[in-house]
Image 1: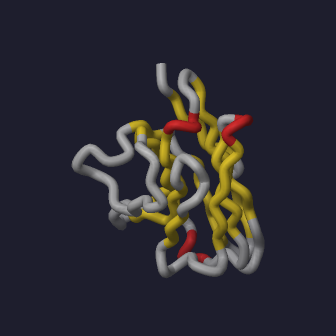
Image 2: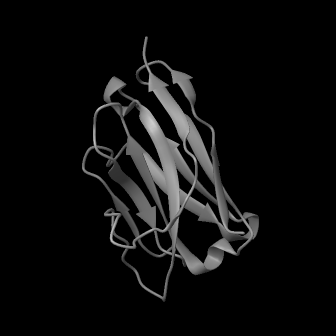
Length: 129
């Protein structure tokens, strides 16, 4: 059974940092591109960042560029999202999602229409003083 589990969320003050982890079980993460998405109350889910299966392509939403960094360690079947300089508007439930991929240096931040069909349950990130 393909499963993704996120961890690392929590409460942090503005300007603080968190590192989210997405661990895969039941399959090798090395064949999948992985995206991080978030959804705040009353808002639509948005793509935050993604990384290609070979770690040679990444993509970031404009709102997090320069603050968030995505990385992966296929030997640990894990993808990370390092979040620095957090803002109250970053408050949301963060999800990781995977999609089997051929070799490519591009990944999309769009989901739906069959993209990123494997999803975790999410981890809450709250940025507040």
